Picture 1: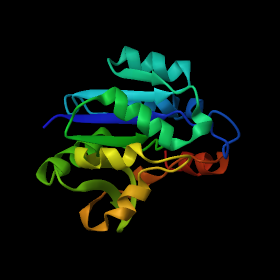
Picture 2 (picture 1 turned 180 degrees about the vertical axis):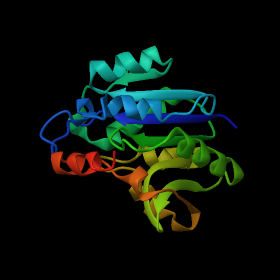
Picture 3 (picture 1 turned 120 degrees about the vertical axis):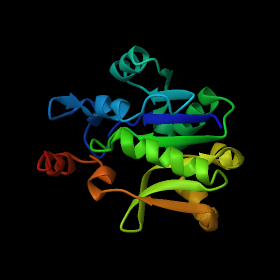
Picture 4 (picture 1 turned 45 degrees about the vertical axis):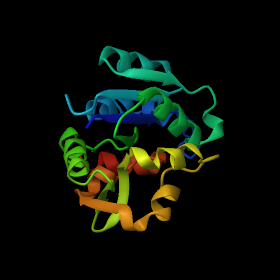
Length: 191
């Protein structure tokens, strides 16, 4: 089964106070860490949806597609729509945020493998039973993802299908994101 991957790197970082993806952690910008978390030879198509030139350039350098999100103010639903359109026909798509600096390519590969075992389910990373990102959705849920509006993400679709959710436990640090400068500073303590 062909799988796609959408790296969601289009947000304006309003809670952060600006482009958080360009902020460095241990010498690498957050967006670079996100692109490096995509394992080789797992996804047929990898698409970075972004408003930032640096993200687009690195995505192209890595052989990924990229799509310019000219309206990040339309919310995460627009990023999802752009990503699904760019990925094209596939059996499932993994959506990952670009602000989880400790997410590993091994974890992403494990999520894909878990999905291939049960391709009718949504597979999501979790820690101690609490769902986080990334999440991998089967193709038959793409129409619901495409109907999302505003700053609403895949959580709405997951809540509509709780019986189809499969959690995969990962270390809590891999789910941590850098939504605020304080959160990024706390993450720096883990290096």
